[in-house]
Length: 110
Image 1: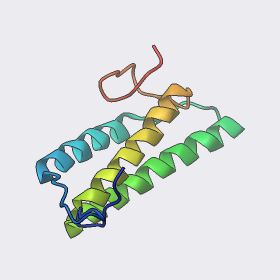
Image 2: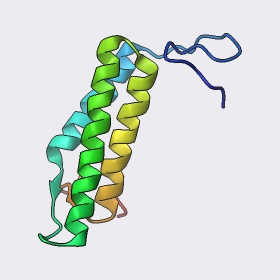
Image 3: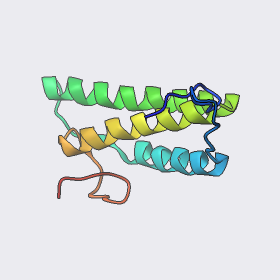
């Protein structure tokens, strides 16, 4: 894997193209997923604490993605939105979140 800087330039000097529309698409998908997630772990419990932590991580990475996108840093915006969605998928698979069985927005176990 080649390392790139925030402008998408690899150590070898090539520029990696990442269309703005592609990043916008994934920002929209993750926003829909964030709006759909409901924590179902009971209070007070360790599971609830973990669910809240997973959701906080997803929201933080999504916020970072928006920040990078607004700065025109599409590489880091795309990376951040993918991390955000990964936290949501993990929380859904672990049973922390009710996602209404939505297999289009989430990677579910069944």
